[in-house]
Amino acid sequence: MSKILQAFENKIDVNRDLLLLLLIGGLYSLGIFLSNTFVNIYLWRQSGDYVTIAIYNLGINLFQALTFVLAGRLAKKVDRIIVLRLGVIFLSLFFLCVLIIGEKASTFNFLLGCLLGIGYGFYWLAFNVLTFEITEPDTRDFFNGFLGVLQSLGGMIGPLLAGIIISKLDGNIGYTTIFTISFILFICAVAASFFLQRRSAKGNFYFKRILLEKNNNKNWSRILYAHFFQGIREGVFAFVISIWVFVVTQSEFALGTFNLFLSGLSAVLYFVVTKFIKPSIRKKAILLGAILLYFSIFIILFDISYFLLIIYAIVIGFAYPIINVPYVSLTYDVIGKAWKAGELRIEYIVVRELFLNCGRIVSVLVFLFAVSIYDAEQIIPIILVVFGAGHLVIYFFIKNIYLGSSSQKEILMKEQITDEKNR
Image 1 (cartoon, rainbow, N blue to C red):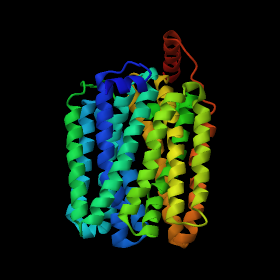
Image 2: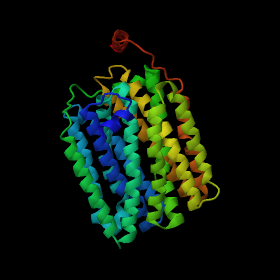
Image 3: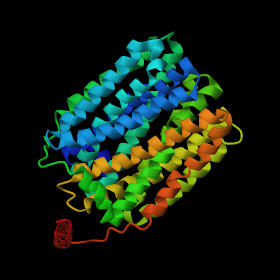
Image 4: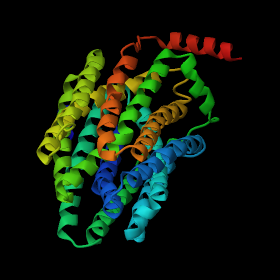
């Protein structure tokens, strides 16, 4: 395994914590993809209503944003590993509640979404901060690429396995089985976290100060607005496409196969992208991926069939790695060169996620408003065309980001000047 890693990373040195964080990310991805892919379908089977699904997703995005702020404040007082474990615990509770509530899950859609959002908020705040701390500029592309591979593998194995289990077992037995497997995977992730080096933080939580830092730092402002428009696309696409696949096929196994094509191609492309996309061509790669992602919508816009949905999955399976690896790395580099990034890295992560989730919330609210006024089958394609341009808009914000090569002395001088202005 070490030889494979060494060849993959081009002999870049990696430490034990980086590998452990990859392991935790892989276990989390498999657990989430195994179960959460089918929660929307579970609710759809009970309600047959887009509004029910949208309200569930609104609860996720709303409480994920709120929990990020709370988790950020908590991470400045206690070890970040504890925050990570809290996230996994709440995710486990979510699946347990879905199992207990059973056939009445659609009645408690918003509350279930809130519980899942809390789990996401705690987990991703800790994971993102640990990513920022453990990786360096020369290992960041490797980490994001390899994590993308693990996520893609989880996306391949999880939904397909879940689809097979649900199709073979009657009633709620299939769902009980996949929720149990997910719970075990989360326990393994918690166990792995005990081997990470403790990373406590000191100082106060300067959330408002970093929120206002976008007025002083153009790069920070641009990356925040880019994340808002990323959220605009993700908010609706997170549930509409999976519902369409199920409506067309009426089969959980078919949905698992759809995810197999999507994640399988992404896994291969993450390897390729990590190997060949260097910092000098990050922006061009993001533009190429965004164009592919946007025009993929038109494959399923005018006529929808399972064959066309598979073609769509293949195209976005190519597009996402081309965007995500350079985009995530660029984001962390912008934060890394920002004012007092070392001391206030948690606040930077929280503010970034706040903009991302605000975009998702706006997206879902507009969707709810639209389907309450117009016929869902007629208005949804229009929503997809408009909101699907979110990643294209990202490029117009990030294309003017310039990181330069400031020395440590220059960075300290800039921080002193900024401090004087704020007094």
